[in-house]
Image (cartoon, rainbow, N blue to C red; front, side, top):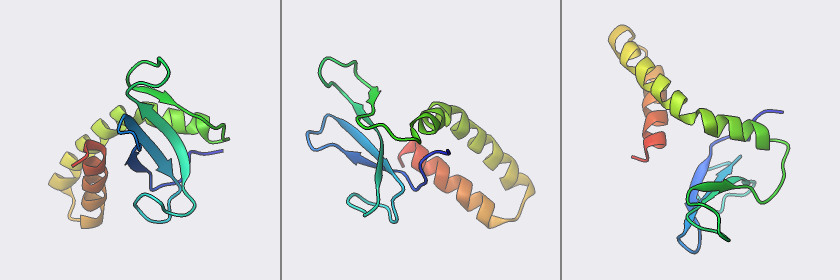
Length: 109
């Protein structure tokens, strides 16, 4: 089984102590029908360390989601490198736009 389909969205939890990440959302934004929790990142929950990702429900996509999250820093750097090369040697705006959007999302801009 693959990872949870996108887009993935970030939602600040109700208590303001962390973030919830949802996938399989038909449209960006909190409250979209069909969303599936990917993980939660809590500042502190029952003695957990800050930044610890906690999954509260088991799902067949959990392992693939964990691999994708773990690869995120390398994927971001690869996108930045690819963008710099594509901008120099390609005039295909769709590739440039897709990379810029992914980098912007990853960097929270």
